[in-house]
Amino acid sequence: MNDTSISFPHRNIDRLYCPCITYLCAIGKHQSSEGQKKTSQPCIPCAYKVACFDIALDKEFTKLVPNQRPEVCPRSAANTKTNASNDDDYDSNNNIDGIMGYRRGMNVLTVGDGDFSFSLAVAKLVASADNDSGGMVVATSYEDKPTLQRVYPAFEDTLNSLQNCDTKTIVGYNVDATQLNQTLPSDVLQSNVKYHRICWNFPCTAIGNGQDGQNDAMEENKELVRKFMVNALPYLDKDCGEIHIAHKTKPPYNQWQMEKNGNENFEYKGRLVFDKQLLPPYTPRKALDRKSFPCHDACIYIFGFRRTSDEESTIPCAEDVDNDELSIQQLAQLGPSSVIPVTTQLINNVRSIHMKLAVYRQEELKQRSKKRSGNEHQGRKKQRRRK
Image (spheres, rainbow, N blue to C red):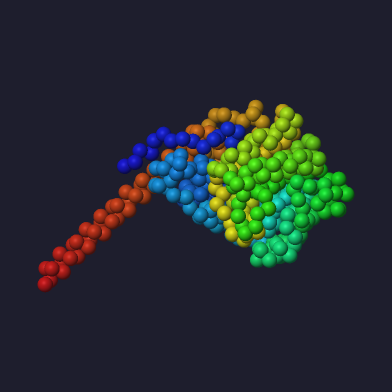
């Protein structure tokens, strides 16, 4: 039997946080929105999100517990009901305020959103229940509308749902993240609105045919991100504005050194484990390609103005973080919008639970196989006796 306590290299956990709900799902303790039904098994896709298991770091685990498609996540099955035209279950949950750092009434600017499914997810999160608390989403794409209609079959449905959300929405095309002051829609520029969140998921230089910018375009991509942040700063709310950049963390993407884009006044706050199940109906897609791509290793890099405390910050201030390990019961009471620090103990717990379950399943399969072989042997003996 394999040793489930074997030591292994951990992912970089410096200033790394995780949605509480993602961790609970990873260890099989997530509760439904009704607070009744729990997941029957620990979730493998969420385990990989939290711990970022990789064959280069933990060959034993990845062999015994191979990653699965994100649709296997039990929360994904519930979210399939939340499509572009049916958001009753999603919007009826009063506990979504604060998920992934988005709160009701916020102004959000998204850039580089291919099919606008991310903008739609955010619009649901910031929509005010009574429509009296403001809130606005400016959804923009680098491409023009005909291109998006051609590439993404469900684009029109998503666009209609976005424009019919219970929050003000403005859509912009041909918006360059490095030239926002020249390419944002004119009514946006004239409004002088300040944003609580400005977001860009998986930024990369304009490359056709769905190819990702990697080693050959690394310096160009790093400069792209730097220019984006410089351009975005004037549009941020000075009190609680943040820039969110979702990005993969495995090589070669970790070499982008995303966290170094902060400065003495606008600092790098930390990273949040990316969990797209909290953002239905968002699906990350390659540039100019309807295909999705694996992103279990992705994190949201968060930057904001230097401050000591802010209840609207996505990442809690250092003095607000309880370094003591919380019990499962305490974690379950924190709510879906809470985030917790990713620690070595937390990763070890996820690993141990899945390793023990995998070993148990292996033993169970062996016993079933042995029993089946015994039954087949007995059957052959009976046949010989009849002859």
